[in-house]
Amino acid sequence: MAAVADAMRNSRAPMYFRPYDEVTALFDGLDLVEPGVVSAPLWHPEPGLRDVEPNEVCTGVGRKT
Image (cartoon, rainbow, N blue to C red):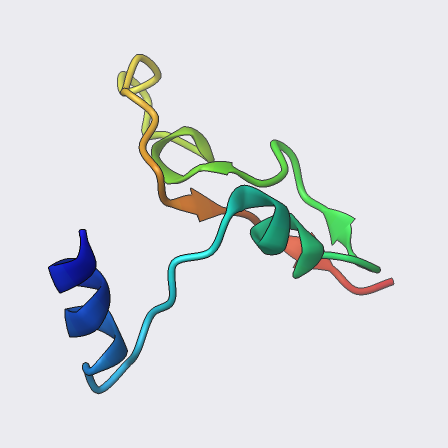
């Protein structure tokens, strides 16, 4: 996992691993679109893919009111 984290930090588009609580804090003050902040494959799966396994990548969409 450390090698993956180093590669992501050193890429042209760096990514940073954050705990779930830090991800949800990024949406403070926004109205979350259902289903909220969830595992990426569960956000809006394609028809027929509703039984996918969750992973550790979380995603969400928020609207500014």
